[in-house]
Image (cartoon, rainbow, N blue to C red; front, side):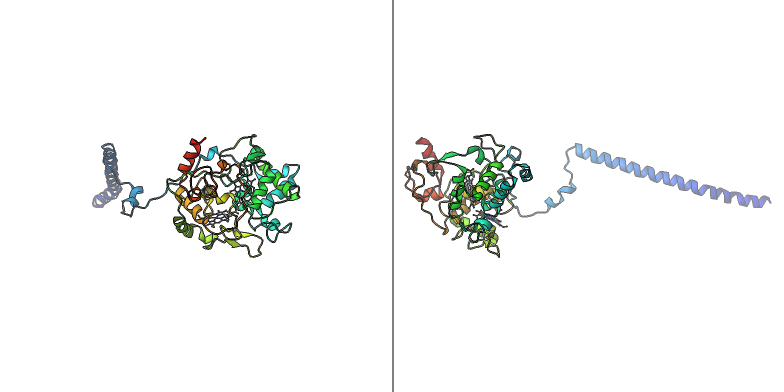
Length: 365
Ligand code: HEC
Ligand code: HEC
């Protein structure tokens, strides 16, 4: 009996001791682990306070030697918060003349369908739409918008030497940018376009020209704009849509363009605003290639000027300009047709450098 008890005792003792030993070893392991952790953290802290450079995980890829690529810093052309925003088109439906306003907008967007070579109202223009150049129906910031038109017309314009109203200005674009005929001043179409353009600018105080109106002014280069350099940029960045021959891509049904022409017989004529290099450069800088905006421009200033030089050195329709600029001293620096009141050549008035022309102009004032 005693024996068995004796025998049992150590057995019990052992079975009681086993979990105890496990617990102890577990505690020891835990202690070891936490000590290591504390020491580790302390070490890292020490390193960071002592100024030793630690390799950072996020910097990893930069350690791999790569060829230095210059990533252009995309910078908005002006502070977006300062730019005037157009009213929402849906608000047009609340106006008493909603139908007329919507027709006016439709004519700006799909001009060719109504007034192009196969126009259902009248065939009187080249197949381009006003919106091709006045983006988002004339509301896009720096997209050649109509923001300031209601606030600044009628006004004296030196090109005609007369006071012009909005009707006259619209017909200027019909006869030059759309290389067509003028629209009757009292037509339903003219009234609708004028109403729409007035609606776009209705919140702008009389005489004011808000930031983001019209076109961006690209800083002048120190050299002449270069058609040869422009050709290279054109082939890389523009030809995919506007085509190598500049003729764009017509819609299959012939009612207009998918990609409008930049030169050739269906493009704007040499009396149009875009024929002036500064207008063209300003348009493309903030709007092309398609997708660029004033907030995310794609072309550099040089590329914009060189593209203007290339595109405007190609063949396009001509217009009788003999009545333009009756006071030749009012010709803009980049109007490329003499006679001029200064001594610079037609070549320099077309391609620049423009800084000397501008300087001569301001000193003669
Ligand atoms: C090929 C491009 C092009 C097309 C197409 C075009 N325009 Fe223009 N338009 C211009 C340019 C460039 C200006 C002058 C912008 C400047 O000098 O800042 C201008 C100016 C104007 C202005 C005066 C803007 C201002 O603030 O003084 C009005 C209004 C206008 N266009 C209406 C129209 C209408 C309506 C159509 C369609 C029938 C049209 N344009 C088609 C390029 C075009
Ligand atoms: C992805 C296609 C695409 C590319 C690339 C492109 N454009 Fe355009 N471009 C258009 C479209 C579409 C319009 C008309 C926009 C509208 O009607 O809303 C246009 C309009 C224009 C206009 C005014 C209308 C005209 O025909 O005169 C000019 C100027 C122009 N682009 C120049 C350029 C230049 C320069 C480049 C190269 C830097 C370029 N575009 C690249 C699609 C493109």
